[in-house]
Amino acid sequence: MQSKSNSDINHEQIELLEYAQKRIKQKKFLYYHFVLFLFISAISLSLDHVFNVSSDIIFLEYSWSFWVVFIWFFLLLFHLFKVYVNDRFINKSWVKNQKNKLIKVQKAEIESIKQKINIESKIKAESEVFNKKPQLITIIVAASENNIIGNDNKLIWHLSDDLKRFKNLTKGHHVIMGRKTFESMPRALPNRTNVIITRKKDYIADDAIVTNSLEDALSIASDDPQPFIIGGGEIYKIALDYCDRIELTRVHDNFEGDTVFPEIDEEKWIESNRIEKKKDENHNYDFTFITYNKIKR
Ligand SMILES: NC(=O)c1ccc[n+]([C@@H]2O[C@H](COP(=O)([O-])OP(=O)(O)OC[C@H]3O[C@@H](n4cnc5c(N)ncnc54)[C@H](OP(=O)(O)O)[C@@H]3O)[C@@H](O)[C@H]2O)c1
Image (cartoon, rainbow, N blue to C red):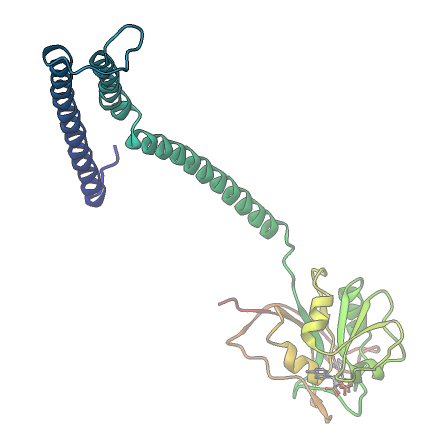
């Protein structure tokens, strides 16, 4: 059973005391009324019958004193009924109790509705989390040993296996790039959604979506489970914080160039896969495919 707090007990005690005082007052009045009735009845009857103080008011053959006593008697009866029946059972506190009972029922109902809503919204939130596909924002880049990725808005090397890998990984996905990288290509990459980032408000590009920030580009790709950031240097630099994975092709040589990929911080990134490739008739350099995943804190 739930224990009552001190303030509840005090409040109840005060109410009981007030009620008891009120009842005493009511009964006292009833007693005075009774005494007054006896007194007035005695005086009326004496005046009428002993001192013969008569009146012209005679109704149904009864004297005026009879009617005084008779009517007053009913008033007294009414008073008696009010004190012992009406005020005892159907008084203010009875009304209050009924009201409280009703409020209690309403409160319980509201509470159960609230609980239902809470449970439903919890289930909805959980199912949204459950249904939301995790997104793997991925940087894909080829960089030399000294982190050079391009020169004069062009790529420096041609590695056919690297291009094949790029095509396989990015096919069907969003490819997000800076305006300069887009302009370094003959046209938009086919079978991918090309998204270009530029500060120019009126930039127009064929077969590509133009945005003015990396955040906008990523929100366009929000339904893609693996959107790719494909360069160049400026975009890689700002994208590193947003990305979960880096697909790096490390070209094992040093080059001169004007565009660099930022140093990969080993405190933040962990290598998870590595495939080494030797130079051959189609590839002028040794190179390695390395996958890095961001370390979740
Ligand atoms: N090796 C690789 O894997 C690889 C991959 C891709 C590219 N690349 C090479 O990288 C070079 C191009 O890279 P890059 O650094 O010069 O240029 P970029 O990153 O491709 O594009 C730079 C442009 O992006 C826009 N931009 C940059 N930051 C922005 C921001 N915060 N908000 C809105 N727009 C922004 C600006 O466009 P606006 O000037 O129009 O405002 C800026 O001029 C080329 O040599 C290319 O061949 C190499």
